[in-house]
Image 1 (cartoon, rainbow, N blue to C red):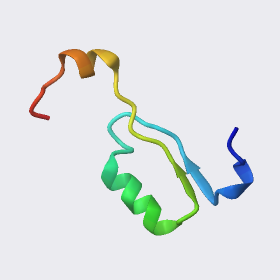
Image 2 (image 1 turned 90 degrees about the vertical axis):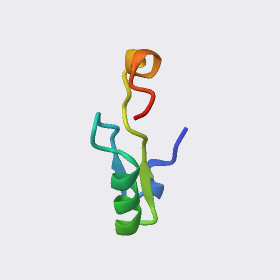
Image 3 (image 1 turned 120 degrees about the horizontal axis):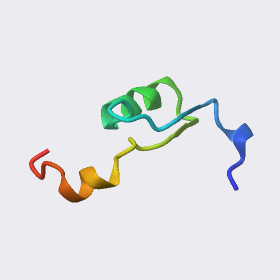
Image 4 (image 1 turned 90 degrees about the horizontal axis):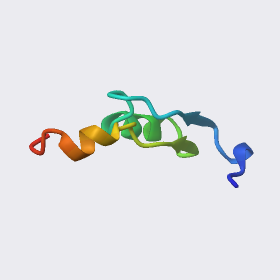
Length: 52
């Protein structure tokens, strides 16, 4: 279980928003941030554009 008091703020995963650039920006704001990766739909992983 995560210690919720150890983080200044927490960012929820959001589709097309919490990409690596967004997480890097949040890391600049606070070293004590709980950051989650971007949400990806399973069909997009299986059948999506491989070049992307």
